[in-house]
Image (cartoon, rainbow, N blue to C red; front, side, top):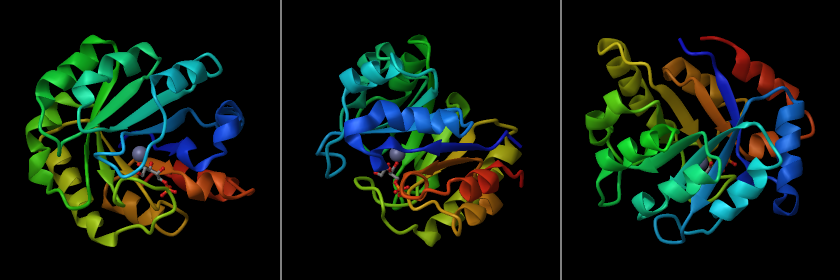
Amino acid sequence: MKEPVLAPSILASDHAQLAKSLQTIKSEGLKWAHIDIMDGHFAPNLSFGPQTVAALRKNSDLFFDVHLMLDNPHEYVEAFANAGSNLISIHVEPDYSIKDTLDHIRDLGCQCGIALNPGTEVKAVEPYLKSVDLVLEMTVQPGFGGQSFRKEVLEKIRKLQIIRKAQSLSFRIEVDGGVDLQTLPLCREAGADTFVAGTSFFGTENKQALITLASQQS
Ligand code: DX5
Ligand code: ZN
């Protein structure tokens, strides 16, 4: 079992004070920040670009877990690596050379992840499981924070966990969307070890309950 990680998503924080949001994560003793990148095509929203990530990097030594929700991630991995990302996840759904892009991310000195939407079957990511550090299972449709967790996705997390064990692989299983005090334990029980939390982290003054819950081993 990997050490559990809580990765707050700055999408849910005050965008006028992103550097401060990273300080909040750090001051809570956490190590990862989840940064959502959306292009208005793959996901119906726009968020941050490489310039934002580079500016944040100057203000923070947190581990930047960068989630590219783009139709053409292969054209941007270099810019996001140069901006100071530590891990870059790309989606399996768009049409581009996924294996080459994962290799490229590694060559650029970052860890790499493969992401899948709630409606995408686990078998779509199976060819890449040996090549990635992390599988990002979306537990909502990409685009917006604050949506309800989709319980039907738990079955896919169980599948990933079974494959990971059977093949003695070591990728993290990250869940992203609607993760809170109620749904985090369900994800952990299914096999997840890396928990993105936007609204449930930045939307409350009392972050300790979530932090304590996320730090428990399964
Ligand atoms: C959705 C993003 C998520 C989002 C999660 O497109 O990938 O990372 O910030 O937000 P919450 O935790 O509010 O559902
Ligand atoms: Zn995300």
